[in-house]
Image (cartoon, rainbow, N blue to C red; front, side, top):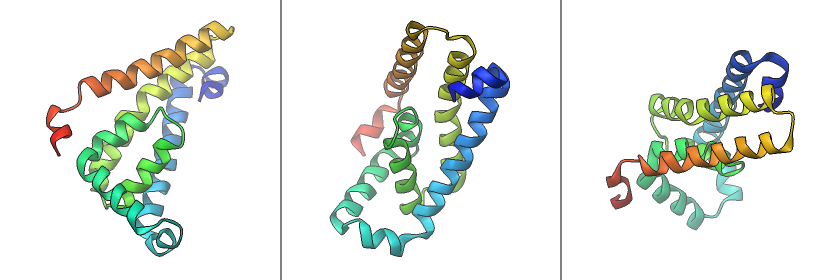
Length: 143
């Protein structure tokens, strides 16, 4: 994503990264939704039940908040597909969670020439995650 900002500039780099993020997320969602027999072979039933409880409790918010975190983001999206989270809600959550990190990384790529600037952008992404956590619907914790 930062490379897109460096090559294409902030706006084009952000849009390119967002497009890739959305398409990748959609593929992961479809894997979760339509590859259940394969997933049943590699994921134990106990773990599947944990994932279902997690998605029932956190739902769309989990997609938004996980986007900046590698591996967790992909896992949550596959869980969203497995639990058949509404596709429109999923895409909206994916968009909201992706747009901020795509923009921040594109800015980083376009303007960062030092390690310090890269670290600042990393901190900004983490802070964005914390902001999403803070503004979450409070009833989400109560199931």
